[in-house]
Image 1 (cartoon, helix red, strand yellow):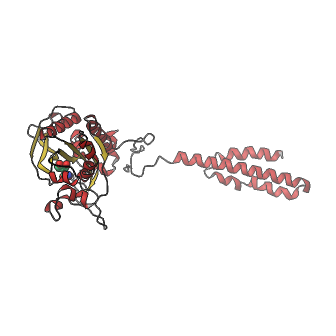
Image 2 (tube, rainbow, N blue to C red):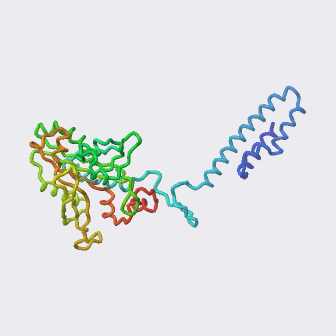
Image 3 (tube, rainbow, N blue to C red):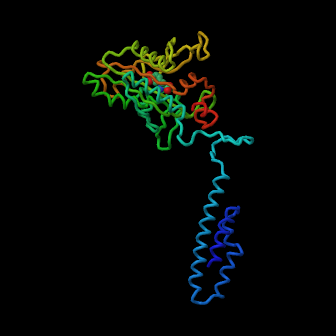
Length: 335
Ligand code: DAH
């Protein structure tokens, strides 16, 4: 038995030197223990055999532990999305321990925060919808050419991944009707992903984010709308801004406007660099009617625009495609 104890220490020590530690069970000294059994007095064989088995279990456990340690030290943390940099030993990882927010999520939270502070409630928009919410409720007559401008995807069943967040308007209006009739106002933003069947380039994506606002009261005005939008943009960019509008056609507003800001000098703009940020206008009476709101009693304004565009200007991002690319070199700039 003492033989086995001495051998045990030797073999355990040897495991730590082996690259394939389970080979220890093939060691000739260990195997030799079995050949001793037939030479023993039959009364001793049972106890001896048991002792060999104990040792075997112990060696297997030690070999497995060593195997695991070897694997841990030889494998780098693996991020299959990381750019493959041949000469770099340090992979360009995001901080995986605590996780990170996508820049769009972070900026969207900022947008929501600003509007919430102005008294708007906020809802995420749907990612699958129908013809009624995409077009019908928004005063696009059946077969109207303006429908074609939205490059809309459709499922085989006729459902629509929304091409704009205006699909939320009818729901927001219907949900707010009671509030309106008890003397309150509807003030709501809807934000989320939208989808268009577009040719993708630096300024066009098939998947992007929009934020939509709706305000209805018994005396809403275009002036209030411009004030609201100015307040939002000045808060988001942290500075005074010049704003400008020009007529724009959207079937769901009348009048409809395109709203632009002058690119601030601090963000590389020159006087006269106007950037169109969104579409807006006074909600068309037919849109109010579609939600069973009487356009003779209530008036509203609405706006909607892309979120990426806001963020691109703020951070000088030159290519819209970065947002959906998952590129770590891009994402790491926002840590
Ligand atoms: N939905 C329009 C688009 O995606 C933008 C828009 C224009 C939204 C005018 C509005 C609006 O609410 O009043 O092109």
